[in-house]
Image 1 (cartoon, rainbow, N blue to C red):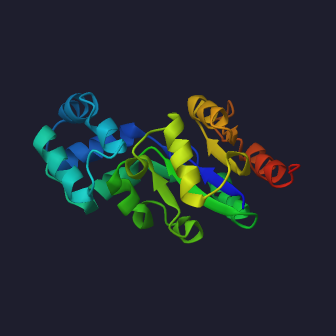
Image 2: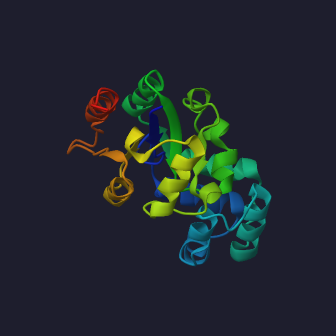
Length: 210
């Protein structure tokens, strides 16, 4: 069995934190500076991404305690979705990969993100079929080696039979160091993503010598 792992932010969906932060501040009734200087600069989001908060409720309670901004999950989703734009070529590539093997997310994100995928990523949830691995569940973030080995273990697949698609050079190198194949999605000078190279990498992986 071949497994095609896809990062989410800046790989399947373009992501702009500078669109998310103002919306969070507006919905939460606190300043952008307070949110950024407490939750993000304080390392709480990173902790959430490695499983510090086991449920969306715990995450939102901690967020309120740290920042003073009380949010519902629906408001968190609204702000998160405001920062996300589908990359059509990448979405199509994931669907194409699904005809060749098993596809899965492998994303550095907290539990509310996983719980919100039907709202945030309606273009891909059906094809993923619950293969929605996030770092909060795996207890490690890319590019740590253990996130790759744990993801591989979920599918019972050898490293050489899996490939990661990611925008981060460090994450790609981490996957390769774990024995996986990997391809880095890059942006052209005109701001478009080189999804054609992603599709070529999908087919090269599918047609490799065993």
